[in-house]
Length: 126
Ligand code: HEC
Image (cartoon, rainbow, N blue to C red):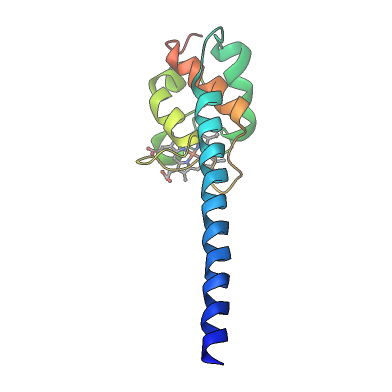
């Protein structure tokens, strides 16, 4: 009776352990994929007016306009976006040390984060 219980417990724990291991692997693969797709800027040269402004206008300016600068950040014009570029990238990547943005909304998709990151990497051109 006791013996059966021990065996059962052991195999349940094994399955549990293997599941955790598999989940960890999947998680790791997902993270690596994200890191590569958002940071490789080869051949990608977004500009503020063509690529970045529309993203910020639709996702951020409701809380970050000239008249409503949440956290002291105005994302409604080129010069203040350029000044805040490092903070913008950190916040949309949900990097540690930055407030995750958009606040209260879903994380931006990888292609959008890549556009913002590569714009910043290229010196934030207008
Ligand atoms: C619903 C309102 C809201 C939206 C939408 C929003 N923010 Fe914010 N944001 C805030 C508030 C409030 C703060 C200040 C408090 C804080 O840092 O959490 C802030 C702070 C920030 C900061 C300063 C963070 C830091 O760590 O210093 C940055 C940069 C920023 N937001 C960028 C963005 C960007 C980029 C978007 C769009 C992708 C965005 N925010 C969307 C409300 C918002």
